[in-house]
Each structure stands twice: as C-alpha cells, then as structure tokens.
Image 1 (cartoon, rainbow, N blue to C red):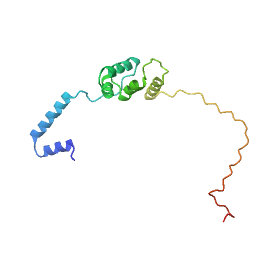
Image 2 (spheres, rainbow, N blue to C red):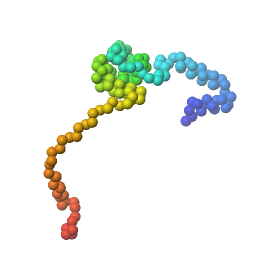
Image 3 (spheres, rainbow, N blue to C red):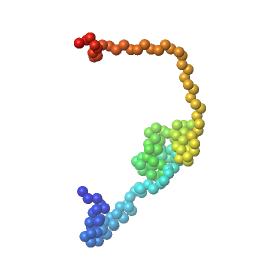
Image 4 (cartoon, rainbow, N blue to C red):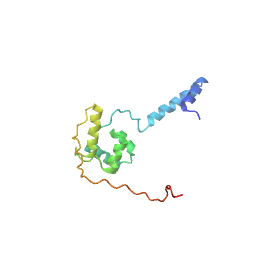
Length: 147
C-alpha cells in the first residue's frame, strides 16, 4: 500500500497538477475545520491547585476528553488523568508526593547537585551462632553406595 507522500510524488511525475491542487485544497479545508491544533509546546504549565480545579470543572461541565482538556489547559494528558482519577494536585501542600517529585525533576533539569543525605546507619548485629547447614533429603539425589 502506498503512502500519501508516494501518491503525491506519483501525481507529480505524471504531471497531474489538477489532482495535486485538489489534494492541497482538501488539506487546507481539513486544517481549517480541525477542532484541536497539534501541540507545539516545549514545556507544560506548572500544575497548581487552581489549574487542577479548572481541569475538574472542565471535566464535569463539558463532554471533553482528557486529551482535549490537556490541550486546552497546556498540560499533558497524564496530569489530567491524575487530577480526575486520583485527586492529585488539589492541595497546596509543598510536601505532597507529586510536588516533591516535580521539584526534584526540575532540579535535575537545572543540573543542580543532589542534596546530600546522611549516610545510613549500619544495622546493629548481634553475634549469633552460624546456622547449621541444611541437610539435603536423599530423595532425588544419588550417592555412592546407592547403586
């Protein structure tokens, strides 16, 4: 099966300019009637409680899909799903797991060094006698003298 690009090249090779013009006019009409333009953003909008409430309002009051809501508010569809299904981002708590993860990701993007964590303490071991070796059951093993 030929792709649309191959089809266009074949039309050009055969000098079918009228067909090419018709194809271009159909493309222009499709772009003009498209409801959602393709996303062309480099970074998304920062998730805030206000934005999360706006997402919930759009979800409740319109029949828009999660993808359409995401395009409208400028975030990705996964964030919209988190707000709708799990209620994330609705609080202003900076210690919420999603806020901490976002801040860590931003720090990594800026190239900031990791915050040093205190070294974990070694567990205190009590001297226990070494466990005796487990005795294998003779079932399934042959030993000298068994034959």
